[in-house]
Image (cartoon, rainbow, N blue to C red; front, side, top):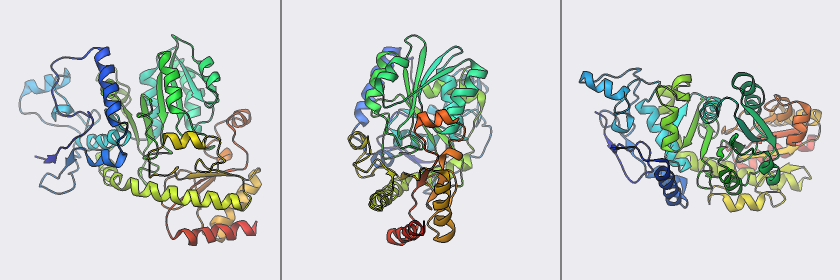
Length: 441
């Protein structure tokens, strides 16, 4: 039998049996109290306070539960599990597409990281996003979303959901709160969706104000926090649901595809419902071995984010001194610098991403070619959060799903280079490599 230590932790399938179901008012009150309790908690402190799983034989690392199915001691136990009377909160498991102990442990970590009651980890970031949207929206429903989004998310909202589910989306400038308010149709709009830090323009969303506006009209707020784990905590700032592509900073190794949904216990249990849950029925299951790998990386995420952010800040300041048009929330010239400063968790900086506007795709490609092939500063590759610096021209890569008019509305220049700043080598060594490439331009 696995051993564990349990310290103070958020409510994440804590193991306490509930004799009855709270009504909506009591759920809302509990969620509000939970949010207030974690508002000032550092994500690293929250991670250190959750239940620690030991291995089956007392190992300091948990065992990997690789079973697809689970046995019971009494026949009636299975009936009680399928009726919902017994479940993972009581350490009863049915099938790994539903809940798996190893994946559940990673989910606890993600909930602690984001300060939510619960979380569920999935096979990819897009599966997390699509499952949330399908759970929260019904046929004929409406979404208001930021005009600047990751290309795959934009395609999901603008093409796939309207075609398959009759769910439509109005795209707006997320910094124009008047436009956001006007786009919300009371009684029809179900979700307000945006990224905490937009991909690839690094526009920062006013999470508290947008959440307040949405909640006044009965709209659920979903925030993609992939660009800013540890740095920002959207749920503490008012968001209802936080989604992640764990493949990025949280993994850190560019070797795993994974995602997460973080939110209320009610939401996660609903998404795992045997009859109507989007996660349960669509089946974007995370492999237990992948969950184990990721759970071993989260404890040092804070250290990695500090260094990603420190180097990005230094590079952005020096690039600006070279006369480059650089976009980074840590610069006082960034339009939302003060907003970001007021929302961030202390000591983690402003994130590990910066963008350089080279104006034309030709100039962008030329710079990236020099940076990779001449000076070895980084790699031309999509994705982010790797320990090496990754660079891509967003308009022709990760935002290629947007048509020219949509790119213009999103503020994506043809020559915009998105740069995920790594931390290998010394800062001065890597800066010298960048400077040599720039001078060669």
